[in-house]
Length: 232
Image 1 (cartoon, rainbow, N blue to C red):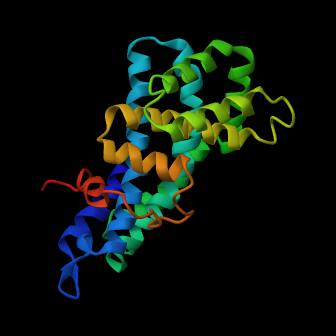
Image 2: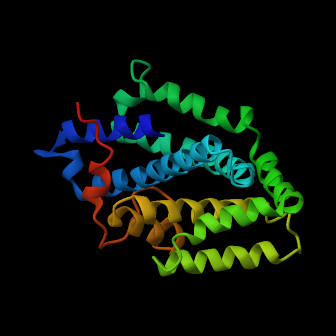
Image 3: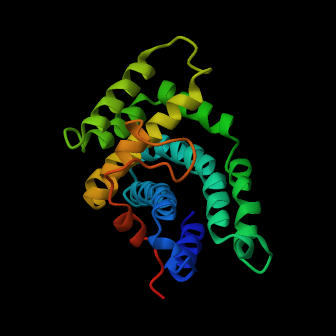
């Protein structure tokens, strides 16, 4: 995800259309910022999970590993596809790294465990090791009170987890919501306020669409994208 975003932001910063760099055009800025939000959230989650392994935090890493595997693997292919589109024809030909990233991105959901396997593993961990769910929710709650949308989402996921009806049918939904709450908590605490606000507004608050480039007005898109542009 990070490599694909780096390729897209670098290209947009140096390619112009109608006399203006792509990165300065409103719609492209929307697309880039949207891509950057998912990349930054995935990176924050990976680093937090790595810390849990360094600290031998078994309860947190047991559940967070399966959550991260499911969600990051699902989020990667559409992100890479959009980044390839940003670069255009040069991103499609084999001389670019993006075709390789595009081909390889779905493989993560196979060798790390298919989506259903990971989602059901989360349910298994919740059932057999309830302390792992307590640890993940405690991590989410570190940001309690910092953003009302996160507070609402965390309350909602708790209610959903407490409902025993059709739990396997809802497994993917539950894991997705856990992942988004965990990522939002990390970004609210560790990223610039503009990043955390944009993530909560669109991933939790319903402010964005299903396609990239549908972030709402009022967000600092330039700041979000600038953090991911290569410095070379």
